[in-house]
Length: 171
Image (cartoon, rainbow, N blue to C red; front, top):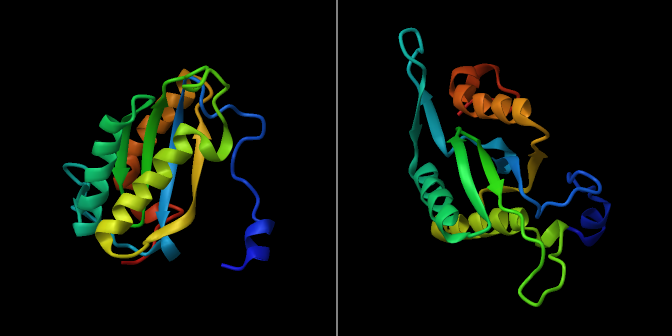
């Protein structure tokens, strides 16, 4: 990627938001070119909901989501779903006021959310043998209880809506 192209990129972050405070964040991480390589949605959903069947790439992603949730003291994974070409994760960021030196914790690129995403991608890519992820991820700071419940429901129902999803792509 050219340096000029990187300079022109706009942030997807909410302007003025503190990504290190105590809050829930809904996160979406997509594969490059929305390639369907993480899972398959199987089943008709007539008597039961469609099920997610993880590929080897999805199994690796699943492993690191769980490991990183245990690794980070300042966040926890509340819920997630690994779809064919993207992952939705509801994270709870445990607010921290100051860093180890007593200085304010940096926001933006050094936020716990950014570190989680970059570490997750790096660990997965190392095991994959190459990068399969889109450069950016999308996040949404949860505003209130209703917003939280709607996003949890979205994660739970995502497999049922796969063929209507804006990220849907043929495998």
